[in-house]
Image (cartoon, rainbow, N blue to C red; front, top):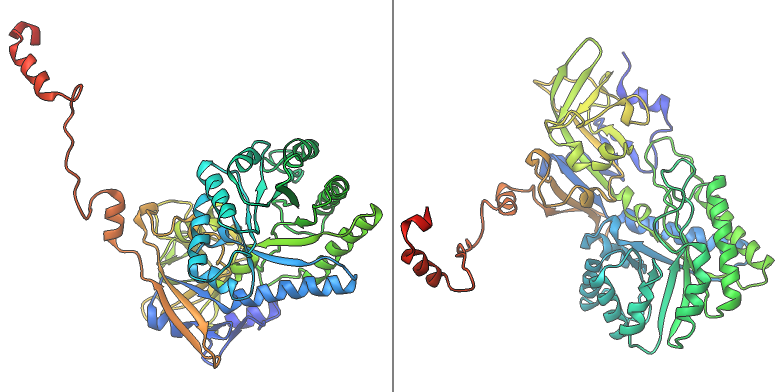
Amino acid sequence: MKRYIDLIEQTFEFPTREFGVDESHTLLFNNVRLTDIINQYGTPLKISYLPKIAEHIDNAKLLFRNAMKKYNYKGNYTYCYCTKSSHFRFVIETALKSNVHLETSSAFDINIIRALYEDGKINNNTYVICNGYKRPKYLEDISALHNDGFVNCIPILDNLKEIDYYLENSTSETVSVGIRIATDEEPNFAFYTSRLGVRYNDINSLYLEKIKPNPRFKLKMLHFFINAGIKDNAYYWSELTRFMFKYCEMKKICPELDSIDIGGGLPIQTSLVFNYDYQAMIDEIIENIQWICNKNNVPVPHIFTEFGSYTVGESGAVIYKVIDKKQQNDRELWYMIDGSFITQLPDSWGIGQKYIMMPVNNWDSPYEKVNLGGLTCDSADFYNTEAHSEDLYLPVFDIDNEDQYIGFFHTGAYQESLGGYGGIQHCLIPAPQHVLVNLDEDGNITTELFSPEQDSDSMLKILGFKSEKKAEPQKLTTNGNAKKVKKIAEELPEEALS
């Protein structure tokens, strides 16, 4: 039987720039020997390789710079980080070191903006693009940013009434706003038009009736995003073209409009088989935008993006140990892990998201087809061929005498927030420890424990079984006079109380 490494090398182009195997037949992830981290911290284990964040930001900036130079594009490009992909401080601060701006989606995001400002990580000129359907607290906090001098805080109007709050409460000299346009969904989606944004037919009246009459308010941006992401298919180009013709139409009646936000959606690698041509795609976006603007005799817009998964996704990994092997019938062999897919990689369970999965060690051993099972009692807590890009093979090993570790890679976006980080998980499976991996000034690998494995005390506090101070029970009163009620009851005859 061939070795596992032979299977990978004959199936994929391996090693890659990101993955390789060292002389001890163990996996390298961005030249990090994963067994060293496992030996130091144990499993289950989440890893964030921070240099990957800067690498992707710099790469995206280069893609747009190359395309704009190729087509002599006169607008500017601004990279915003989509904070909902991962709100962790270490992610946002790492991204900010690469001179990015920020996109928010809720009121609590504004608290993060305030904290970053107080720490000197951002300033009043940092772009803060405020997306989402905004409840009162979010509206209030956005206006507070305007009034405190955040000149580049741009709320993206998601409905026709949102502007009313800013008109009444944002008192700064100039307030810039954007409008999100409701795009059509993919043909196979459950709904025809996105619930997010303002429909095309209402854009002109929203501007002419509510924004233009107030000289302090400027429509600076139109926002475009489709859930399917940036793909080279007829659907994407059709929606982008429709959007750009609307931009040109609005530019002719709104001279201060000068920017578009094309959202996020650059894909990340979810398989060793990956052939997305980033540069060709960005080239075509720039070429199409410029062609449509030239056709309509309007200047090209400045371009903003809100890359989230692309920024942080490929920095993440989750490492498990195989703790048991179960042969449940003649064909199905289960490798049981010391964690849970439902709680720790919820996208793999909820939407069938694929990740790069490889063993960490024993690459010189023979291999066999397996299914992977998680710790919860839910029958859906598994990862197998149906959920994976290809058939799932792992090294053969002796469970009594050998250790086998496996890794899931490019898991850095959304999994902690969707899984309820630090909260209560299915079957009370604890959140795993989280380790940050970085490079020092000399290029040496450093590790730091960001958070230990969740303990029982934190769960008991959330569930109400344990608290710092037990609240005194409250007495029920009627009209604030419990004693009077008691006295009246005592004076009543027994038959009245029976």
